[in-house]
Amino acid sequence: MIDYELTSAQKELRERTALFCASEIAPSASALDSAPRDEAGRIVREAIKKLGKAGYLDLLVNGDFVSRCVAGEELARSCPSTFFSAMYSGTSFGLAIKSFGSRAQQDRYLPGIISGERIGALACTEDSAGSDLSLIETRAELGGDKWILTGSKDFVTNAPVADFFLVSAWTDREAGCEKGLSFFVVDRGISGFDTTETVETMGLRGAPAAGIRLSRCSVPAGNLLGKAGQGHAILGCINEWLKISLSAMSLGIGVACMEVSTSYSKSRSAFGRPIGLFEGVGAKLAIMFTNNDLGRMLTLRAAWSMDRREAESSVLASCAKLFTSESANKTADLAMQVHGGHGYIKGTAIERLYRDARFAELACGTSEMQRAFIARDSLNR
Ligand SMILES: Cc1cc2nc3c(=O)[nH]c(=O)nc-3n(C[C@H](O)[C@H](O)[C@H](O)COP(=O)(O)OP(=O)(O)OC[C@H]3O[C@@H](n4cnc5c(N)ncnc54)[C@H](O)[C@@H]3O)c2cc1C
Image (cartoon, rainbow, N blue to C red; front, side, top):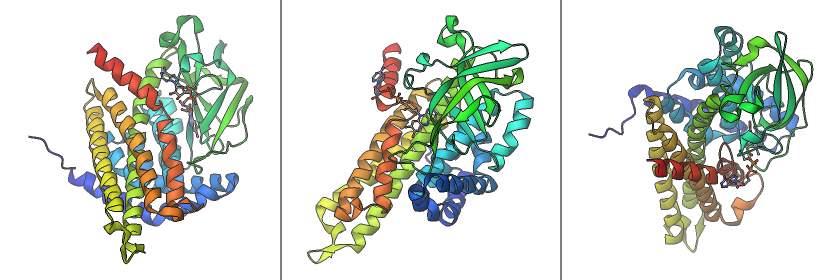
C-alpha cells in the first residue's frame, strides 16, 4: 500500500509555517528585493531572527527532511530570498556543524544559528571553480597549532551579513579531491579576512552575496571541520541537502506563481468574461497545477528516501531538483503570460518570482550537472 498522507505533526507544521510566513515574511518580500543592498541586509537579518524564534532554523539543523521540505515550500512561497538565505545559514552551515562538528564547535556555533541571532555561510565557489570544485586554489597550511588559509571565494550567499563561514581548502593537493580537501570554520572579522562588495544579482536579491578574501588568515586547529581530507565527503552531504532544499524552494515559487495567476485570472476580464475562462489561459493554470503536484511528489519522495538513508536518495534528490527547478521557470513564464503586460512591470510579484525562479537551475549543481549525475547513476546500475 502507498500512503501519501503527511503525519498530523507535518500537517500542523505546514499550517503553522504558512500562517507565520503570511504575517511575518511575505509583507517584506518586495522591499527585500528592491531595497538598497545595505538595507536588504538589515531586513534579511531581521527575517532570520524571526525564523529563529519561530523554530524554523532549529528544523533546518535538527529536523527530518520531509518536515524541512513541507515548511520550506511555505517559506519559499512567501519569499524565496529569505528561504535562500536561511538555507545557507541553517542547512549548509548549521547542519554541517551538527553532522561533522566537534562538541566544542557545536557548542560554539549552533545556539546562535538556531536562534537566528547569528548567520552562517558556505564558501566553496571560486573565480575559476564552480561546477568543478577540484579547480579551487584556496589552501590551508598547518603552522604550529593554527591553520593558515590563503585564497579567495566568489558568490558567497550571506557574506555581507554572515558571522561564520564554512570554507573549503586544500590541505593536501597531491592527495587529490577525495583525500586532499578539507573544510574550516572561519569567524568574521579575524585578521586576514575580508569581504568584497555585495554583488548585484538578477533575482533572489534579498539573499545578499559577496566574495571573501583570505590573506594568510589564521584559524585555530580546532576550526577544522571533521578530519583533514574529509572535505570531499562533507561536500557530498552538503550538496545532497542543498539539492532537496532547492527542490522545496522551486516548488514554493511554482505554487506562488500558480496562486497569483489563478487569482488574476478570476479578477481580470476581457471580451465580457474572466480571462481564466478562456481555454488558452485555463490550460496554463492546468499545466502549473500539474507541474507543482508532480514536483511536490518528487521532492517529498526524495526527502523521505533521505530520512530513511536509502542508497538512491542522492539520485532521487537530483531528479527532484532537476524537475522542480526547470518547472519553476516554466511556471513563472506561464504566469507572466497570464498577467499579460501587467506582469512585466517592475515591482509586481510575478516579475520578482520570474527572476527568483531562474537561479535554481544554476545553483548547487546546474541542470546539466544533475543530468550528468543521474545518467552516470543509471549507467552504473
Ligand atoms: C547569487 C549566487 C549565489 C551563490 N551562492 C553560493 C554560495 O553561497 N556558496 C558557494 O560556494 N557558491 C555559491 N554560488 C555559486 C554557484 O553554486 C555556482 O555559480 C554554480 O555552481 C555554477 O558554477 P559556475 O557559475 O562557475 O558555472 P560553470 O561551472 O562555469 O558552468 C558554466 C556552464 O557549463 C556547464 N558545465 C560545466 N561542467 C559541465 C559538465 N561536466 N557537463 C555539462 N555541462 C557542464 C554548466 O552546467 C553551465 O551551464 C552562488 C552563485 C550565485 C550567482
